[in-house]
Amino acid sequence: MPDWSELQHDPLVLIVRRLNLIEDYLNFGTVCKSWRSVATKGNFNSNLPRIPWLMLAEEEEDNTCRSFFSLYNGMILKKRIPKASGKRCMESMGWLITVGKDEGEISLLHPFSGVQIQLPHQNTTEHYEFNQTPVPWTFVEKAVLSGNPCHTSDYVLMVIEGHYQFLSFWRPGDLLWTRIRKPINFRHISDVVYFSGHFYVVDYSGCVQVCDVSGSEPSKSYIIAQVAPWLDGKYYILESLGSLFVVSQDGVNIRYVKDDRERFSPCEDDEKKTSYTYGTRNFLVFQIDLDACKATPTRDLGDRAFFLGANASLSVQASQFPGIKPNHIYFTDNCLDAYIHFEEGGGLNMGVFNIADGSIQPHYEGVSLSRVCPPIWVTPTFC
Image (cartoon, rainbow, N blue to C red):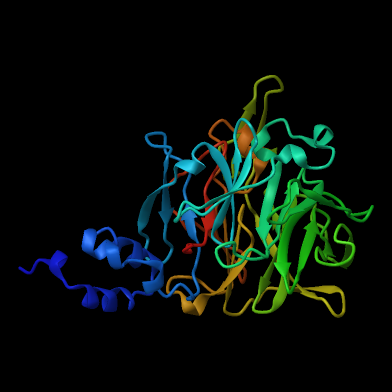
C-alpha cells in the first residue's frame, strides 16, 4: 500500500484545488502534516456559494469545542472555539457576534480562523442604564454586517438592542455605538438586513423601514412598506436574488398550553399552576416592492430556500446544493424568553417548513439545547 503522506507537494496542491466542499477541505488538512501544509486559503476556491452549517449548542463535556452539522451530507464536524465558550452567539457573513454571559462584553469572532475583533461594550449604547436587560447576554437580539471584515475594513455592524427597542451601529475605529432614531410609530424591532447599500428593518407589527447610515443624517430612518400584522409572531427580513422579502413566523412566542397536542414539553409555573409552551405553527412570505412601497404575499419562492434564526437571515439557490429543498424555510430556535425561562433552555423549535403545503419536518434529528446559545446557522468561510 502506498504511503499517502509521502505524496509530493505539487500533486497535493492539484488535488486540494479541486475540492469544492469546505467540509472536504477541512478534512483534507487533518490527514497528516504534509497534507495540512497545502490546505491553505490560497489553494481553496473560497468564492463558491455556501450553505450554512448548523452550529450546535455547547456540550457539557467540552465547552471549548463546537459541533457543526452539514445539511449536505449529514456529517458532524468539530472545531475548537475557546473564545466562544459560555457566550451567546449570533451570526453574519460567517462571523460570530459573541456576547459574554456574565459581563456582556461583545466581539466579532471568526470561528474557523480564530480572528477576533473587540467591539465597544454594550454599556456604551445611549441610555444603557435605562434599557439594559436582566441578563447581559440578551441585550443584543440580532447583529448584521454590511461587509465581510475578512475582505474589507469599510463595513458597518448593525445591532438590535435594548429589549428590541433600538438600532445601533458600529464602524471600525468607533469607541461607542451610534443609535438610530426610529419613527415614533415604529414598534419593537424584529429583524434587519443589509441590501443594496442600505439597512432595511422590520418591526413586530410588520412595518418596514430603511436606514441610510452613510448619508448626511445617518441616525434617521424612514418607513417604506407595511406587512399584514400577526399577533403571535416574529418577523424576518432578507435579500434573495436581488429582491427583498419579509417572512412572518407564527407561534414563536411563549403561550399557554391549550391541550395535549402542543408540540413541546411545557414549562410549569408552580405558583400559578399554569403551563407554557411555544413552537412554530406557520410562516407567511411577502415580497417587498421598493418602487411601489407595498408587500405582496407569495407561496412560491421558486428555487430559493431561506435560512432563519439568530443569524443574519439569508437565502440560497437550492439547485446549487444537493439535499436543499426549494421553496422551503430552514429555521432554528430564536425565542429568547424560552432560552431563559425553560429549564432545558432553547433549541426545540427547529425544522424545515414547506411553503407550498405548510408541513414541518426536522432538519436535525438530534437534540441540542442551551439556555445561552442554542443551535444557530453559520455560513462556513475562510479569513
